[in-house]
Image (cartoon, rainbow, N blue to C red; front, side, top):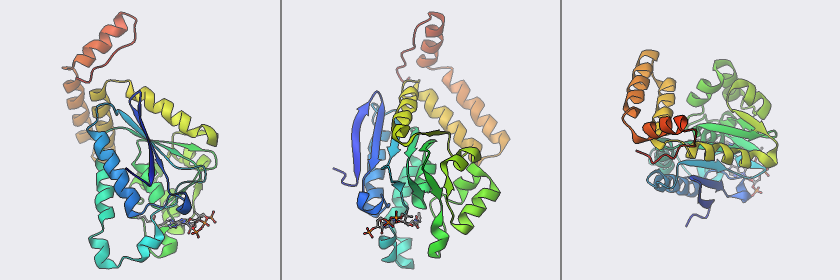
Length: 257
Ligand code: HXC
């Protein structure tokens, strides 16, 4: 049973995970990352879970890696660091993740938010990569995903000065897709996740994979993947159901095959 997370059982296909280390602004220690990785691993094989929402508290989504824990590890410790394994597990998760962010999303917290497919933030949220202030640099995607999301100039400014950006700036830059009042962030993320969870699971999986290809391959390879995935879906019962439901003017009921 996780102690650093609150997990609500899947409702309408959506699993909601709340980071819960209030005493450390949800700093990502080994235990929290391990529990998150284990939860996502189980959710990956659970047909009742079609999308996941990850959130934190009103004050912090997560204030980064746990600095006190980092202080205990030297170079050798870093090379065998179980946290790297947990990050890799989180990265491999195959279903849509929506991050509902309020307060601080700093360092590893910003990187965790960027693992999500969609980020919704409250208007007081702050996104930043302050590692440079500790004499280090981002290590879980904070240079790679951030640059792809906001472009070279802003990513470089954030990583080299360590100064965070507001939710408004994050919206303009394309890091997040919507701003809400803080008390409505989770509700909005759940609404989006519930909508996604009702779609044909194979179509969601392949569309998401195809979107990911846009981040890490050249255009021709991405287009080839897209065409291949599109063709694969042509053989599914859910495609037949989606088209028939449209013609019969009723909502589609997708079965996942
Ligand atoms: C451990 C942390 C923490 C952290 C906050 N706390 N952030 N503990 N690791 N990352 C603890 C504080 O020590 C304090 O505990 C309690 O949470 C409340 O924090 P305060 O500092 O008192 O709150 P406040 O004054 O409101 O300031 C909030 C803050 C500040 C601006 C977010 O806490 C801060 O700068 N935190 C560090 C942010 C950071 O540098 N993140 C990057 C980490 S490196 P006590 O016991 O004193 O009450 C990283 C690398 C990722 O993320 C690499 C991935 C591979």
